[in-house]
Image (cartoon, rainbow, N blue to C red):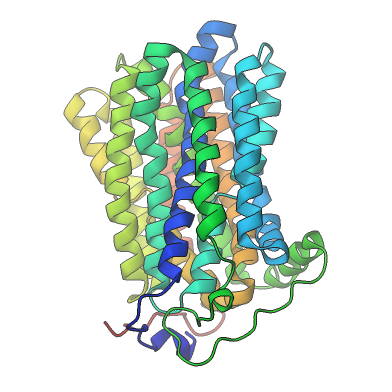
Length: 428
């Protein structure tokens, strides 16, 4: 770990915490948009007669773009700044989401939710959290990553009961218009408070002392920058291990549970509002688990943390098919799984930053996040395919749980090329 990671934080209030606050607003908005397809799946199936596999295809494309945009989004943020990039993404989301009320054909769903909304949400992903944490924080970087990623994932799940109620009372079109309105409202605080780097306000990153250093001048084509970073990172085995474990992370969270838990509950005779409430419970405990994971990642071996988190997630997914038989079983799954929902993000971001450096961390993590979303897209599509062809989600849940055990083993091999990047306890 770099020497600066052991320096105590500045006693003064740091503007970085304001940037964290507005970043959290942007991530919450993106989370609300991403969670909407889980509510829309059954209403769209009922109104238009589209198969669940067709709707899942649109979600899969959304997840692929949401991930594949990541490294290019990070490069664009380097080139044009955080504020302009986030503002453009929010405007794109507002246009794409509001346009869905005019859908009549399934290809329009794929175009709007798959491509347009998927591209916009790619800027409001954990790659934004990783970039903000790496630029603005040296001390407490893991904690900040945990708070941002946990807040985003929690917001994604907390929005679901509200949207389910609005959809049940007023229809799905009212829901998507409300989501678009929220995206427009968040533009205001982002425009006022977001800053690109600590040097913009005359500060060093939180936890460092000395005179502010001028920000490196952005140069070059963002596409070229992103692919150059991929070429350099892909020469290290750790990159592929991190990408492989994050592929499993995406498959076992957003792709499978985020997309198919509500339909699976519907198959078991559980009301959509009750199922959305369970996802909200997952969201509440996710914030606790992810924030705790960030705190732990500042202090303990991140490889071992990843091994533990993936193992526990695998156990919970194997338990899920048996939890549908009772409300209490499903509630137990929601609590246990929720603590682990996004707990893998902070250790992964910290390992990326320690291995590839602060300036490259955002882009390299963006490429690793591509693997995360490819896993999510695969689980979203094959989950729907299993449901259509086999009549249940049982096989999808079991396969996802077994993949988590494989990821737990892979995590232990990260850092074996050299010295293991182990955090040193920071000063209080």
